[in-house]
Length: 416
Image 1 (cartoon, helix red, strand yellow):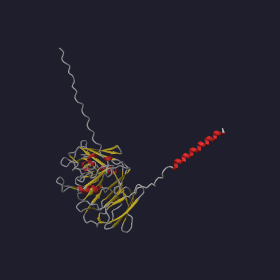
Image 2 (cartoon, helix red, strand yellow):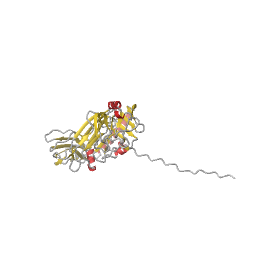
Image 3 (cartoon, one colour):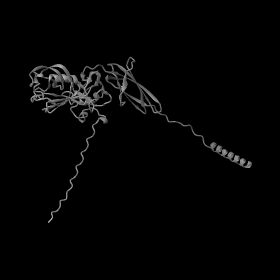
């Protein structure tokens, strides 16, 4: 037994010696040398030392081999300028217009994949206040409550050329809580643009609007006049449906029929328009003066009037036509209801509620009022100056199923 243990010990020593000999025979490895990694490069817009820059300028930073990790803007007094990146990361938008004839400094940092960073600083100077501007009107007021069909509507005092509409539209911001994204639609005239979602707003939705148009170039040396903001909410659901055949208005509140009201509409030579329109204004009293209208020639003051079109179609109290309401049309284009019904409607409706009229002699002209709903969603998105996100594009029309080919039916031969 003792000799066996000694033999095992000799074998172990021999193996260890061989291992040691193998290790010592490996050549030494050269030190690892990593290739030099260039830091990211930056390209900032507006360009360095640029002058006559519009006060609507956005800061765009392009980088190679990295990502933008910091962006700071300060004015010529060293005050930081507030702003935020667009959702797509394409540019940084100031929270309010820049000042006229001011100098701004941009400091941008890009960081590469291995932590190498580059910081670049540039400055630019804004233009003087322009003397030629387009007046804008935003029909969306702060702290208001609107109906579920309320479009965000922006009017321009002169037509915006097609070449400038995309740049203008990029400066129109709408956010909703809860999210309910929509799209913009330009009227062919270029004097009005609407925003709505594919479906009516959900009651309780909060909508925040910013028309960031001050200093935005709008073609031919003309610029936007102002930067406007508003936050409003959507009230409960109210729809008014008027049928010329029955001379009745159906009032639906929160999905349930609440009232049916007899109406009298425009007589044949002054017909009421058929279409989907939105309540634009509400007046306790308003005076109609049609003495310059070939079909007019009267002055009358009415109560509880709600405007539907720019052309002067209203729903209003008309006690003089109560005997005709529900039976015949005698108005000059308005929808007449009783004094009681007009007061009731004033109490339940909002600016922005949808009114649908059908069966009259004429159809509603696009742009005669807030006509954002007087078209299909497919038609609406075609009026956008920018590409509409894929999730808002209408589903492609399904191809009609092919008709089965005719199969000849064997005819039995006559028997003799």
